[in-house]
Image (tube, rainbow, N blue to C red; front, side):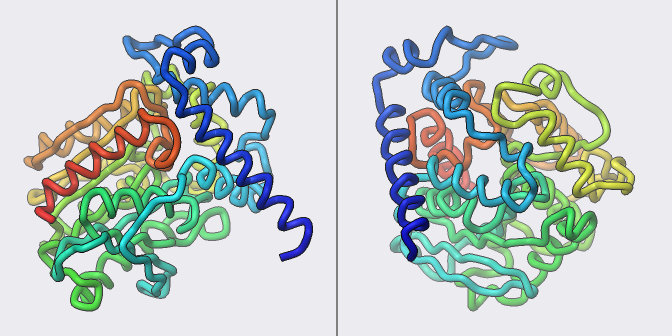
Length: 347
């Protein structure tokens, strides 16, 4: 490692410790540092989240959506490493899944065979990878006792729609053919993802039901479900709450491009939902532009006969899944998600 790389690493470690220290302060102190409480749409933003957003503004670091895409991808990794913390896990193994990079997280002391969650990361279909979601996947696996297989699908704009959709379908089918080596069984495979990854997971669940393939569960964390019509939450939280309208627009232009936004492979909200959809947990955040479309999709699944649990965390922002190592409110929300996954899959 050269001098420049060492300096960058030292700076990163200092920033990481400072952020963790500030967000460990008592809530009344965080409220004083973060400014007047934010109340919007009958919700109050968590004190530690509000303080983190204020620190981000004060740092004057450019939003990832304002950078050239290669630089933005590197910045996204840095941001998530700052907030992810050092998460314990039984073991981690990199492998190939349907010619895609993947990472298998095995919790401490789990039995074999056991349930497996195939996880697709978020990032607007053009950001995100195994590194941006490493801490979140470690935390989810260890807390739930469920193996997590994170899949690194192709990204736009180099690979626009339907590349990511096709990769997700191929990865799920590969898993069904290789369950023994992954320590699971076909009827114990679940699918999940956050944001763009939630969109891909929903698409896998639809096709699994349509084709009669085994799927035990869906974990959809603030999923993208509707590229065509804006919602109230999209208007209310378009700026100032991490996920911006500019990011959403760049994601759509990079991934959807000239494709039809009403194509159900792009927007599950417009899918003809088949009978037999796997039970689902749909997680939303109160201060998230994607809140309303996620909850609307949950209602559509319910009307199609699926068993659906909706869990809104009203004090959270988009991206809280990756805030696994700092503050209190986001890790507490992630602990609830892990507990629901454990209960659903009987780990």
